[in-house]
Image (cartoon, rainbow, N blue to C red; front, side, top):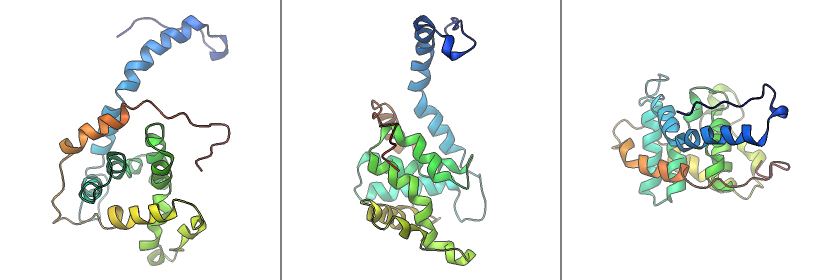
Length: 194
């Protein structure tokens, strides 16, 4: 590892040389993002009970279903990682998963993953006396049907302990390819994606 450190204690006092030092640390750290994401995914194994499959197995099953349905690699990886936020943010897991994917996927995929949690309410909300149609607030959005289909085909139906899933090793090269993409440049001022 490098042994250089920036000279500042306040970012506003940093020099170009300081930020060049930091960039030398950031590049290998960013390059290892896929490793950390795969570790997050593995941490879903045994993370929460009650279902017939673990959240990890659910994720593998979601990705397997997307793959078997002929989805492109980006959507297969999104299906694999759609619940990685469950560990740290169970109440807004879809937003966390979407944030992890955001620099590397299309606006459409980002939107689907960000909102899949609200769309999933359709399948269970009424059992908790909640509005199962909360997704309807997005009914005029261009990707409403895509998110509805994602949840129906790859999420709500991916809890079958008898389903034979592809192993993580099958998906790992896909994850590495997606996370090695040059990040999309987002318009951070307008945050057009929301």
